[in-house]
Amino acid sequence: MNSTATWEREELESTAAPPDQNSESSPSNIATLKELVLRLLSELHCVAEINTLSIVDGLDFYDEVSRFEIDLIKRALFQTGGHQVKAAKLLNLKVTTLNSKIKHYNINPGGFSNIYPLVETLKIEDHRHA
Image (cartoon, one colour):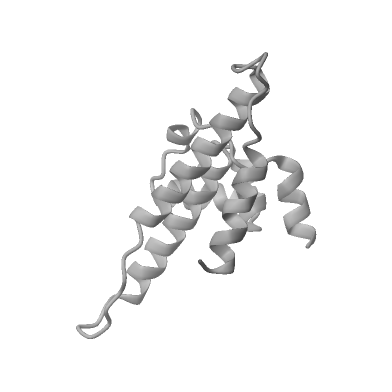
């Protein structure tokens, strides 16, 4: 097993502490389980969308750049539960630029609003300053 897989397994094991025998369905255990499930769904979503490009027959550079931008925007909206300000911070974009791209690509940010955000605002700020 490679070191990345080991690290991720250890992180999940430490995050998913065994439930207290007296409170098997406590709010903290439910929140932890919910967060783990949503992270797993996010990872599965990313894996499902992987497609390799073959340039043997040629490709349209601008179509590929657009597809890449759309994917980045959707991932950021998914990670933040549809919150455009937080998504813009994740992408290091101005909110107006992100909003313009969302409109240009006809992305519906409302479709992400019912998703529990996977990234907290504090983590976004820490990421930008790192």
